[in-house]
Length: 404
Ligand code: PMP
Image 1 (cartoon, rainbow, N blue to C red):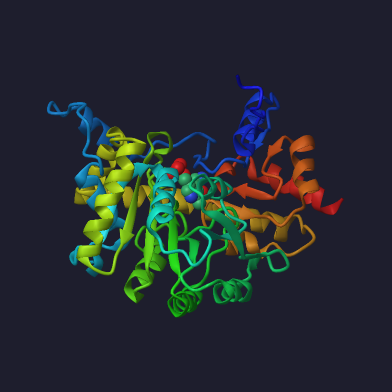
Image 2: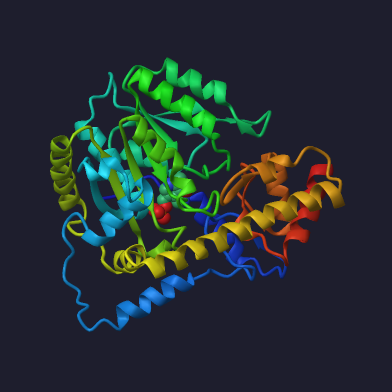
């Protein structure tokens, strides 16, 4: 029956993790997967999440009934306030249609599906993705019949943003095109636009009538501050750029496997928003019927209680600060101690969980084969995989491959 089914290659990131796990070397380092690790290389259950979980378990009224199709109301409304701001005029005016999703991946999927059904694409259905981007974006849009195209983003020459290329692409695309933008802490490059650049991007988006498809998977991880990291999204809403937001709580709440997320579509009027919400509900029904309740309940407790929310802010700050410390330390080791050839300022200039080191695929492979350091061949490292115990080893091995 399945003779015509070709064997698919394994997912490269999860393959990397499997290779790391199978490696018996005592000094092995995993810089592949984008999950936060503490200074002992261990997954970190946020203290506030432990607390909220206990509250849930002790609640005698807790049952396992279905959630509404669009999700747990107090989670969805809290999530919308988190990204848009509690004082958001768009929320007050009833112009935001939100649904709970299967983490950020599910938000991207339902957002893409909604656009494929209802967005007035100029010509072919297409979405413009940053070059490079999270690899799954390609598959997610292909799955719903939207062709992925890329726009210039990362400039290997500067290990920074190709801002002129990005603006050029906004100008060259047909009016009303859809552009996917990473809200903060761009994956995989760690390169974000500055505030002034975001303002120029909003101008260009408005001038060409483009639609912004925001992917917000790392709110809090860029600056350590949840509000500061929502700045680009809030600014675009304020400017009136038509947009939607895909939101994930995987990283900032450490709830990777619980699949907690939301999709928020901002409309020009309350009446349009009601129609959008009704169709999101129809799509959601055929896809998953009802979203999962556990993780949403945990996050809803945190979002809707001042004391728990304050604790969460501190926990997010703890994660972001450790990552920033690792950037500073790695930069110091390479420049001040090892005098590694080349400029390493991008290590401290880049933002969030990831850093694009700028090393070649051959050098990445050499690190894995000879030093048991696992990273993707594009030279991306997860800063969260570094800690006070392995950072010197990593810096020394990086220094060696760069000098060869
Ligand atoms: N978008 C981006 C840019 C990501 O990096 C990720 C996680 N790797 C996601 C979305 C989705 O993650 P999740 O489904 O676990 O929330």
